[in-house]
Length: 135
Length: 140
Image (tube, rainbow over all chains, first blue to last red; front, top):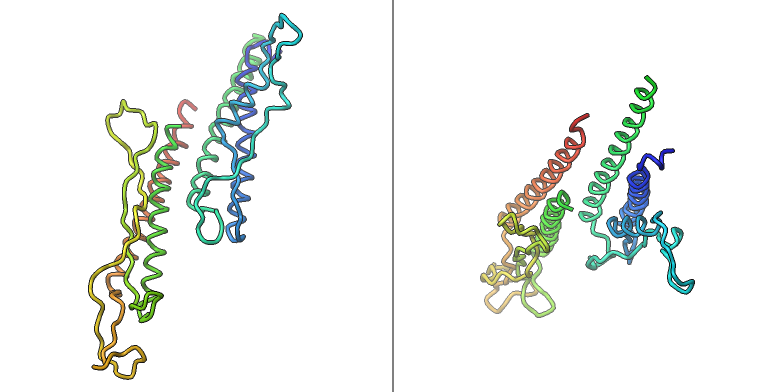
């Protein structure tokens, strides 16, 4: 039913965004945790890229194939957040840049809060429909 | 994303000031160093800052945002301090020793500046964050 309300795409987008932000947060925490680890290479997930991948991967619009040999849409399972090594400069000990990590932490926090805020409003919207619709 | 642009710029400020502290630490640690690898006393190091244009910034704004970056680390070419100390192993025939051209007062002032600028960048970032959080409350 929720899907029929054309909520689906936004819903799924927010779900993915929260998921990626969560994953990204763990990675940032990991990088900060390894501040004192010699020769540690920080890792990251590009939020925008990951979200694009996640959204493109699970497109629910079905494609009509005129030939069985044509390539179909990317199956959802294949599109995941790609973890890459961060491009940071060597600081003489490892590759962790604490200023950069802290900034990313704040940035990611904002993304997470924004996504959850929209989700909360979306749910409030649905509740409103349920409450008022029966009258 | 738009709002994160200011974060990026503030980060460059933080990074630059941190590097500046590295140089100041080096100068302070070597205030009395009379022998370096090239035979001269320690020369005071300074960082030269430059501005780096932010890529793909919306040209509609007609202003170019620039992030701070370190151009180079150079040596202060001012003369070494000559101190009379005949007992020093590096003293010349007249009993004078060349000491590094590091001035404690200058270094302390720079340190204070580095600290304050760092704090200012943190404050700028925190303000941006608060603004974004406030924006989330619109229409609640």
